Image 1 (cartoon, rainbow, N blue to C red):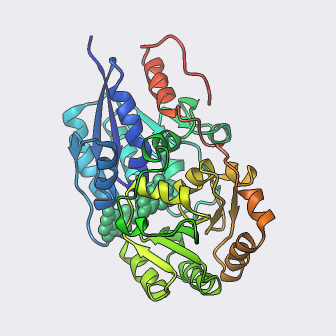
Image 2: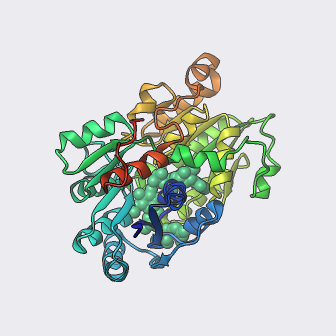
Image 3: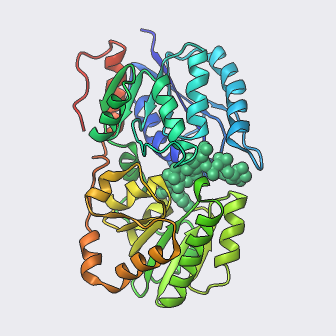
Length: 381
Ligand code: UD1
Ligand code: UDP
């Protein structure tokens, strides 16, 4: 029997963390041929994830350029992926989330008349400018895709509100599946040696990340200035910030934070280290999407360094709070969690609104059902 060819296309760190476990699941199904095509929108940060999951790409478009923009990445993905799709002619192309790779990957598949499956579909802020350009990328992929793998019921409702075409499945988020590979029992030493010398028992560690394009400029200045003041006010705390490789972020982070003794700036961590760092931290401060899903599963409170979130489920579960991008408010909310044990305890409980670790199985089953190779659709998350 001819196998169904499913090509997973991804290119940045978060897509890779959430697509690698799915690629492994697809490869384990006898009815499927699983192909991985990297756009290479990211390089070091992407290769590190592939190593973590022990995956090798079937195709690598190797597109990253210094100073790239969403337009330049879109153009190159359309050209190069278009050629690859014409050669390979998969039966289905899977894209993930909301990056330039996601949008351009889906559009290239549409132009090649190949059906598109969108993993992590239906997240919305309903503000086209924030996150920028991700909110628009998600909406456009919602129009292009024929299979929508929505992590939560709310995500499905968002898609229904937009009357997208095709089939919607509520699967949970594959990031929770990924954490089964990365966290383990939490006792493994860090690959980054600096982290092995941190006294996680004697100090309250704040794990932080910040990289989003809509925070470039004044919001990022405010955030870093707040973190600098927080560190100075709480010398017993230690902020650990693996800095994204974007030159804009690197420059701003070093200017504000490099000289503060209880702020530790590191290179980007591999996914296992990042997850284990959060597991051993007191608090997480971040503008990342993925961390908002991971930290609640680890029982860690999260202050989101943004004005809105497309992930309200954890806010409702009480483990995530929006701290915005104004210095005074970030400082006030962080200080509250450091000073007020009751407030801290109220947020520090494990919640899993984003998944149960079986999203990849559901997505693989949904694909088989969609192509007539299985009699029942998967149960909902
Ligand atoms: C992209 C995504 C964003 C996602 C983020 C995850 C878009 C529009 N944005 O933003 O949604 O949250 O990835 O991290 O797709 N760089 C390196 N090495 C790397 C990775 C990046 O040097 O391994 C540098 C490059 O100089 C690049 C810059 O970082 O030009 C920015 O990367 P880019 O993919 O354009 O945007 P991100 O801000 O990473
Ligand atoms: N991450 C990582 N190393 C780091 C910082 C983050 O592995 O140094 C992981 C993090 O655990 C999450 C993902 O990268 O799984 C989030 O990626 P990012 O913050 O770059 O993008 P976003 O989720 O905001 O799109």
